[in-house]
Length: 459
Ligand SMILES: *Cc1c(COP(=O)(O)O)cnc(C)c1O
Image (tube, rainbow, N blue to C red; front, side):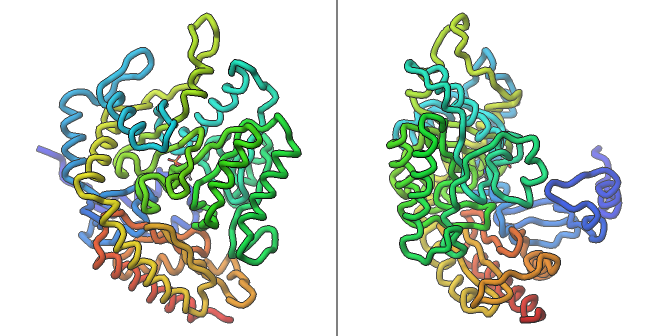
């Protein structure tokens, strides 16, 4: 007999007594009664009281085909019948080999080698260390290439290497004394142009800055790291068309590596399997996580080229081994979930069926753009940001302590929608499997909540 379920009040008390939540002001957390999510179904999460909520941010940007998808559930159960975990250190297993093969088939041209880890942060950390080591070991070594270029507003995860690349002050400033320095390129953010330019043409100016940065640091840059097409954590910043392609050309011209962090944008989010495809770009490293398992289990992959791999292809005695690994890297349950996730993309023609939803989102975003306190709306595929401002004319922001973005999201809960903002940028990022009816409902609630909250503000 299973034990009787523990009541929600007790769980809330245990949470407050013992749990420390990520990216959360713990004192604020004490002031509210947290939702306890108990179950889920498709695009909905269900709490302990049986109330249903639309999962408007895909359980932090990772759910793809909905919760409790029968194909993915069955794949994990099937894997569980055989093997839950075995290491990739000195051994292999079928699901890791099959998934590596499948990822190479799907990835942009030239990415033929797959290194598994377990999170977005580790996927990027692996790329950094591989790039660094590559320059020391390639046939004609360039050991001075030790620096990385990262963009303003960059977010690549929370390990020290990734935080070094990070450009979000709120997250990263605290740790500055611990970090290695990076060369910072301007974020190509047209609405709030760091160079003070008007569009169009501002994207080209940002590219020229990268070109200048590389020209002024000849032979010392190991790689340029970018979130292709959309910088998520920066506030759903959609890069101007041609930026990624330009970056690829510039890195080639200067003979350095391009590291594409597709942790947020990979697996269909932008309308293509990988965002780099939108501009026909093959990076030297492709970092994948979040959606790779459909949002089920922690698994990540760093893909690279034969060129990079061959610099490590040596015997133990030659001392060129990549001395890095994570205990659960390539975990069979995660790999089985990932294979099933990729199968569902085919079986359900997920990318084809996404198109009308993307069009619906575009149409509905126009209604937001017309609101008095919406400064900008940005969208690529099924990924959008709605930036709330005090004053549209001057683009002046709301005071931080007003917590306008948070208040909109809090209110949305009352109408059965779970969303999480980035400051005053509202994020729309539901599972790709959301129905058009559900997407309409999500946007109805968001529109209503933006009106209710911002109409109560001054200005
Ligand atoms: C979320 C995210 C990461 C970090 O992934 P984790 O799995 O949370 O470590 C890295 N890069 C980008 C672009 C992300 O959005």
